[in-house]
Length: 334
Image (cartoon, rainbow, N blue to C red; front, side):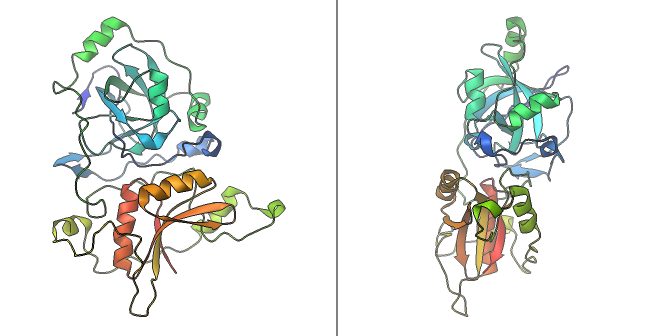
C-alpha cells in the first residue's frame, strides 16, 4: 500500500475519516509555534487485518493516491496513518508535477488503498481531485511557512517536479490503481479504531458562566478552567471495544445515542461532550455528523450526545465520537 523511496520522503494517505484536529475556519485556527508541539504518535492499530505503527520517520518518501479528507475544509491540511501529528510534507501531483506544502493534522484514512487524505483546500491548490496519484515527502519548513498553514492560508508553491522524474515515480504506484474503499459496516462504537489526542484549536469549554461582554475571558483562560475539571474514573468491568464487536448485538440499535434512558433513580446521569465551538455553524455541522445536541454556554456552543443512564452507554458513545475524530471528547456526569 505504501512504497518507500530511497532519496526523498513523501506521504500518501487518504479518505474522509481522518481524526479532526484543526478548525476549517482560518479565523479560529490556533497559530503560534507551540501549536506544532508536542507531536503525537499513538499506539499501533489494526484495520482490515493490517497493522499500522505510527513512527517519527524523518526521511519519509512515498507514492500513492490521495483521497478526500473532508474534515480539513478550506485549510491546506491532510491526514496520514503513521506520520507524527502534526507533520509537514511536500505533496507533488504525479499528473502535473505541481508541488505544495501540506500540514498533516489528522489520523486517516481508515479504509481503501489511499496513502494520504487531503483537504478541499489542498486539492484546490494542487488542481487535483480525490483519487489522484501523488508523491509525499516529509520536510521541515521554516516557521513563517508553518504559520501560514496553521492560520488556514497557503504556503508558497515549491518548484515543480520535472516530468522525467514524475514519469519514474508513476511507475511505482500500486498496480491496482486507486481503490476508494467503503467504511466498515460495524458501528464505530464497536470498532477497534485508534484515538489520537491531537491538539484542537477549539478546546472543550464546559459550563462557562454568562458574563458581560467587557468581562468575557480570553479563550486560553476558558480552556484552563475547563482542564481543571477532574476526569471521571474508568468504569470497572467494561468490555473492551474489540470484544463488544464480536458479541451479539442488543435489541436496541447502537446508533441511537441520543435516546434518553432513565437509570434506577429515574435520572439519565451521563453525557458525552464532543467539543465546544465559538461558531454556531461549526457546532451545527458537528452535531449533524454525530447525531448530537447543541447547548449554548456564554458565547460557546457545546456539542453533546446523550443523556445516558449508565456509564457503559456513555463509554460506547464516547468511542463513537472519538472514532469520528473528536479526540478530546469526554464523559460528563450530570
